[in-house]
Length: 339
Length: 208
Image (tube, rainbow over all chains, first blue to last red; front, side):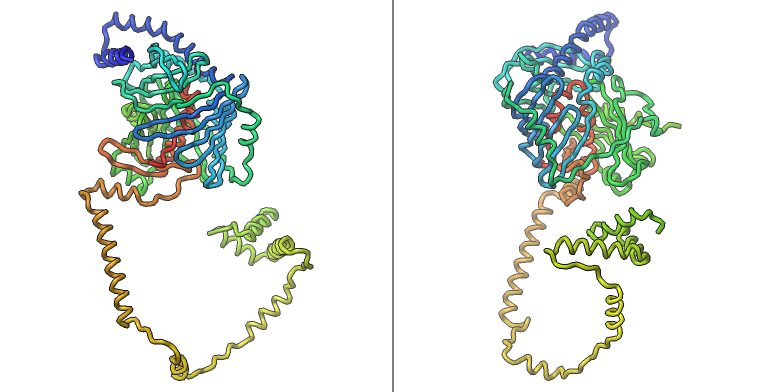
């Protein structure tokens, strides 16, 4: 563990120096290239792990001073992945997932939210698109071994090469490669938030048909499917004047709530460097609502997640992401109206 | 009025079910008043409803002619006002009634006690509210605690309570909806994908 922190400090120290000498740079590039394939291989294994395994576990998410817990059933047969997540804290809800399809049951309001999260199953493509950023902006370090939920795990760090993103420390179960613990680290190695299994039973008898029956039984519930209209930053008349290093547009859409028109619906554009993601929201400025926010701090952070807001003429910009505040500031400053 | 027939029937059906509100309600009523065909539809839906609720009793549509006759007859009726002696009633009414006036000593005691209790509650509340240094930050925090309008259904469990550096709390349902939207759509990255779904499904930020 001490070795790990030493590494973090080394990297931070190197970053603090700012500009590196030419020979250090060439050495760094060579190092990046050797670990690049390492990162790719490691990410593919991480992604493939839950595809063909079944487990039951208790999952704990800690962010800032908050702790949320859920019970998880997961089944995978190589082709199809199904999961059931029953929240044990906060609002009662059960979330089911069948590959990209996500259904959330809210028993208190007798409501079901039906969504398609297209990225969930499209990993190889996404990796191809994002790998350039992952390998260019993060370095993989083997840290050592540890134990999580009574299982032996390998510990790996993915550390950023610039201060525009956070680092990660990841525990993967040794035999299956399943991610069992994830920490988000700031520049000096403080843990900003973490998610881990406190209990995990591998090869558990999870019956897919049973999960399917539960997921599809929406009787007595009001089913809501948010209407999303795909678009692009450019199509909406916006441009990122100075792109934020490493972050490329992933998708952009408008969410239509109720019978609202497409024109006034808030725009959400997601940017990612392959590991971290930032959502940029654009909506018309509302003096009553945004004025109140303007009077307060325009930056709020909790755990690794920050929100940065800005008024731009008649528009209101909000950047949300698990990145350092300065990255969000770069986004809200870079966006401008196309002429 | 140039709506297609089936759409109009749907409007009338929704009105029968009590699902039309606001401006739509007024529009539908105006349409109903001006269209005999819609009135027929209205009657038919009510007849269907009555038939479904009744247990086999014979059903028939109401007779518009009968209703019209009843209305005109009612309009012709004059309401007679019968003068009565107010004094007499008062005298009669007083019999057997125990006089309990608001200025009765017993009531005075109750009222006095209630007002003392009210003052005590108010004083206690104002101490609780204004006790700690009452700066603008505090009033903002109080404001934040006030009930906020319902968040959109996509973010059912949430209210942002993000704590920024100076300890300021911002609560805004819209901001919260954005956080939820980010978690849904932003959890698309290579690292977050295996765990991101579980993490987002586990995470609850409402109860803070």
